[in-house]
Image 1 (cartoon, rainbow, N blue to C red):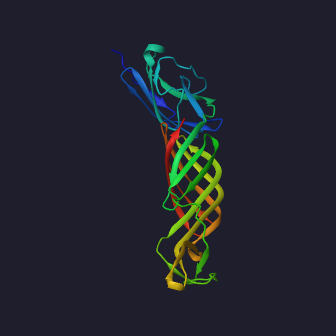
Image 2 (cartoon, rainbow, N blue to C red; image 1 turned 60 degrees about the vertical axis):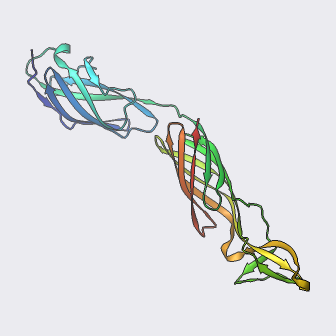
Image 3 (spheres, helix red, strand yellow; image 1 turned 120 degrees about the vertical axis):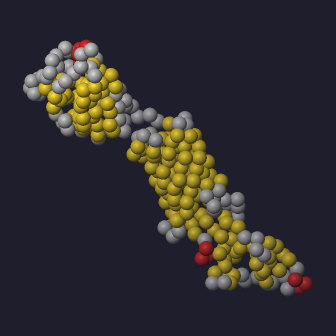
Length: 278
């Protein structure tokens, strides 16, 4: 059996082609084959790479190829990282001891933007019931609505500095510990794709987080209960512009999300979600 004994030159060759870099890291003769280890960098997210191998017998003055008896990481679909080619040299170009120079040339194809419609259930401690819909892709969008268990309760009074400050009716009030958050949010924004299965989202909208204290209204005559209502705990409540940001990770058709939001930049809250992308 013939074996190849040769000196392979051009270790560490780096070629830049339309922004992509290919670098030959190592070449070695293994039996009748030559193995070429190489690396590709700067491949875009929506680009597909195909590799072709060329060889020179005159120190790189001219090259023969693309070589046909090559197996390994040829593509299409090559991405950034290390790759391996194996050339059956004696089958394709019989030669004796030679000094060889190798060159790898890349063909770059743009991949169309793949859009996916997303539906997710989202929530957090204050607004556990939420729905997010949108479109994932290179650039997408989303709309999100969340609410608590009592989103539309309205207060009759205001509680501030340890007292109810706007009660001006006959009778008196007693806090009854029947407290609730009247909370809801409506948000819209954009999604961006920095990596193949990873998306960043950011948006803005309106949010309400009113902490309502349960109140019993009593009349003085016989301590009669008139009605139950709520007082807005002013220092623990907020409403206004809500900013929203986070990450979405796609696993097949499943999407997982985690992020943070804040109303009027006062307090940061966490938000999580799970859904599908079709």
